[in-house]
Image 1 (tube, rainbow, N blue to C red):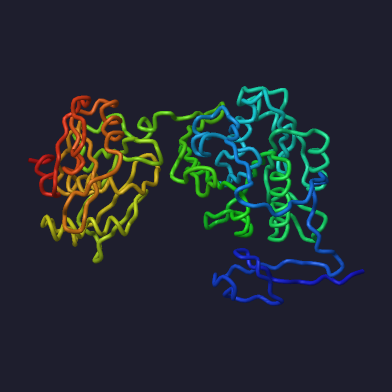
Image 2 (cartoon, helix red, strand yellow):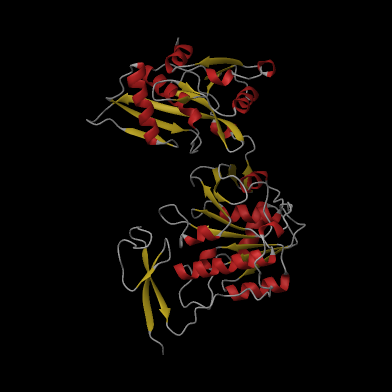
Amino acid sequence: MAKDKTVYVCSNCGQDSPKWVGKCPSCGEWNTYVEEIVRKEVANKRPTSGIETPKAKPISLCDIVTSDEPRIDLKDEELNRVLGGGLVPGSLVLIGGEPGIGKSTLVLQTVLRMPDRRILYVSGEESARQLKLRADRIKHTSSDCLIVCETSLEQIYTHIKNIRPELVIIDSIQTISTETIESSPGSIGQVRECSASILKFAKETNTPVILIGHINKEGSIAGPKVLEHIVDTVLQFEGDQHYMYRILRSIKNRFGSTSELGIYEMRQDGLRQVSNPSELLLSLDHDGMSGVAIASAIEGVRPFLIETQALVSSAAYGVPQRSATGFDLRRMNMLLAVLEKRVGFKLGQKDVFLNIAGGLKVNDPAIDLSVISAILSSNMDTEIEREVCLAGEVGLSGEIRPVNRIEQRIGEAEKLGFKRMILPKHNLQGLDKKKINIELVPVRKVEEAFRCLFG
């Protein structure tokens, strides 16, 4: 019987070491080495898909023929937009998220809406009976969606060779193992080799593959970091299990933008697409409440209005607290410094709490004006008019800097019934006001915006 050999492999870069080390000498990350058991007599041979393809030959760049291949419509507007217009043939897509967030439900209801395509759903975690119960709950049927419960990569290739599917779903990549490596499923080596083999199969046969992956306690995709480098697209499915809304965010996309996001509502019969995100991000009524301001933000190509909530109170302890949910805490501290230095409001001895309604994380600098307006409204305990929305970036000298795509922001505010919009003065240059039915209030400095809001 062969003697087992133990090595330690870095989960970030794949560097191996005969003993455990705290800091990886290759990538510099700390505490990334995990133990793996290998055997000496196992040949280092990558698993093959069993489909013979001719070897590639070097050709000149000008001789390569390109054409716009039609993308695969997934019958889901949110998912299509996050992917960049649909699923690219031959691409490898990785969807990650917390346990129970709805990854399998999203993928299953998507493939069940495509009865015109032959789809192979490989389940390594759930039985066929569990998938049937979920499909019955979703209330979608597709005769061409074939289910197989398998964890061996070689057996999966055998099923693919017999069925010749147009789309392959693997749920999840951490449960798949190959016989060429003597280690347990989910280990660094197994995930790396299986994903590399699946990528080779997808590119050689022009068959798109969707992988479902787990995430670790830090929030990143479980397994080696090379997994995210191998795949073409990485999608993160986010949300709180105690709330019904889910957000699909693009982290990496070789065929589209990474600033897109899709919003879903978790219901008993599956995930519902939220085509108008303002219904999620705006509360129904906030009359008489201070510390609430409406901002016109843009994520990707989609404009929507979000509600920024702030609470300012006297510090109960010696050191004032600063907390921000859905907004960069360092940027909030910068805006508080601008309020104190340029406007004269002393907030150094007060607790400041900021929240973006709906559980959304916003990186658009155009919501700076609504953030400081909500903070000042809570500090003064004065309500901001309900029919007013704001857009503008705040500079360190207290000026309101122009923002991009102001026409789309104005159009979204006008569509939702807002009467007045405060925006940077420089954004009015070249703006056609004849088609706009909302009152525009241009401002240059923070003081002017506050005078318009509070008099």
